[in-house]
Image 1 (cartoon, one colour):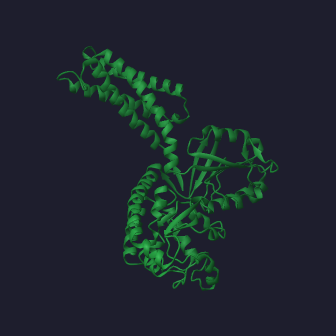
Image 2 (tube, one colour):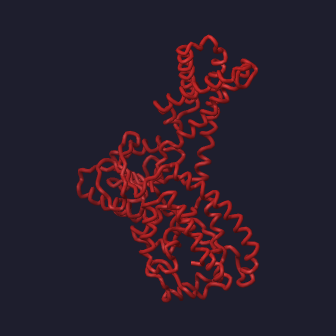
Image 3 (cartoon, one colour):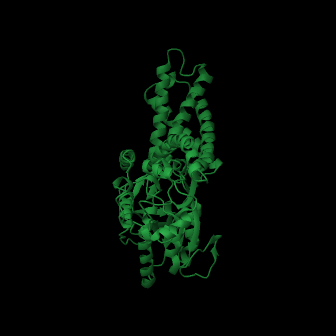
Length: 471
């Protein structure tokens, strides 16, 4: 899924600036007249002036998108932009007051005080936001990990563009030079693979997006790149292609974007607004907090029983593979004996699943209390901690184990292009009856390709029903 951050950050900054203008006007009016909202019986005139300032500011920002390069501006540059913005407000409001014949009754000193106060206030707030947002973004979202595949002749400009345009949400993890595979690094960026092993590297590696910029005149090599792109699309990896527009079966959407001086076609199986992504994360945080509280209460009740029936840890952790190959520890209340993993190899011939997952109805490795917890899904509650940390989501695709992941084909990895979830489409479609792994993959891909917030809510409601019924 390609997360289009579009205008949400600009909208947030616009909202903050509205607040700064309001505070600036209140302080200026208090200094000039000794009142927060105007002189005696003059509050209406203050409200009109406030509306003028906010209106001029909004029109200017909507027309020119003054904050479009906000994150790349230095402190002095930011001061100049903010000062210019406030001077435009001053000129615009002065013109409106003159046109409405209200300039004689308006305080010029108050307007000048407002411009000075708002310039200082807005500059400080912008710098504070610029310092806080990277940490907030890293806390609640993942860095976008980018791999660059580029011919040597384009490498310098491509690496420079990506580094200059990268903000706190992106990380250039490596480069592939098809015509110079002998190099070990380029401009401090490691050369991580050659073109022949690129698909395998992406299948096992942890990355989100691949930028491709190659010479298209070599038709044989372009055919090889096209095959690799198809394989990347099957894995659910986002592709930014430099020039031409081939159709890819694994990615339904494509957008023309510019990355500095280089134009790319971005392929993705799903395109969504940042607003929906933020809303999904907000749901995860609220659900994670509630779930962690519930998990603590369950721990107090079931913890001693788990310990008595099978000595060992009450909460088990297992390495799982998350979004686009990220490895994390998934937590559960332990429902099996401590030697369960060693005994699994002896039970593989009784596996009831067709494919890469293991499932056995009367699994002898499960403890008595474990059977109860699995039937009621109580063993899953510690995963609300994973959700709160951002490693999982309330709704998504179930994360595979490492041994399952190592056996994945290209098309299987597409189910990892979405953040793994506590529940998902295949869980509410009869998880006890589905015995074909490819059917699970089909349902997961269907969820990814058609994801919306409303679909998540629908799945959550269905999950409550199937969990209550013990299914």
